[in-house]
Length: 117
Image 1 (tube, rainbow, N blue to C red):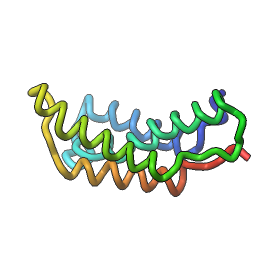
Image 2: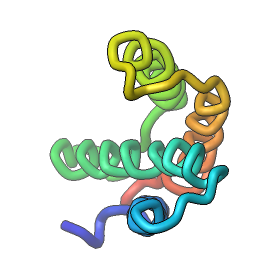
Image 3: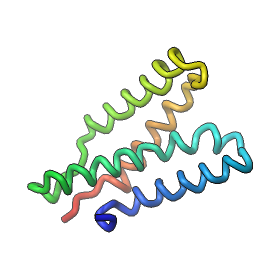
Image 4: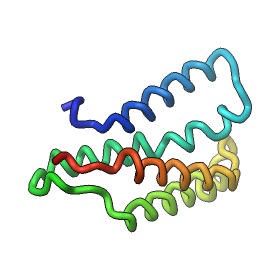
């Protein structure tokens, strides 16, 4: 199961995990603010791609369509930059995060959105 997850998923996941561990001891402002948002698409979309390729394996050349990738950016931006900051004081809205989601999604599109075959 694990070998089917793309190398880009694993890169994003491991860097994300290392960043979370680093944040427990030392916070580098730029990394603390934006690295998770940049890596989230690689993790979320990478697992989503794996799910669709393995649970519905009719088409091994399946990749996530650009419309779905754009929808990811819109939904994540709406939830994490508008809804959560409005409903929970622990969250703050930062429009640079939207750029990080978009850049991470483009990176996933280039390096992680690969068919099995």
